[in-house]
Length: 113
Image 1 (cartoon, rainbow, N blue to C red):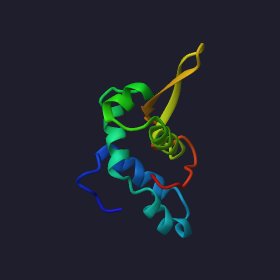
Image 2 (spheres, helix red, strand yellow):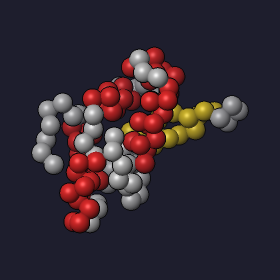
Image 3 (cartoon, rainbow, N blue to C red):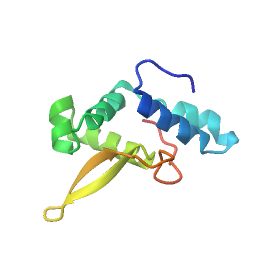
């Protein structure tokens, strides 16, 4: 994957590691599937800057909760983000950038973001 000026370097590196972790047969489709769109980049940058909770992200970015949750779930399934529980009652979660050495939370699911 060629570097892209509008994709944050940390995100670009994670996406490259995800692309490298799948078989050669899957790599062509994977490279297309993991190209982030501007909204996913904006979510990543907001989380990188310290905004971790969905309600805060929704207000900061100005998108619907449904769209935000879909993007967050996709980024979690790719291993870009980690979902962490911060309240038990009621159950609430926040999202942080995955800092695993390999940049994934296991074998990534190949889904478009």
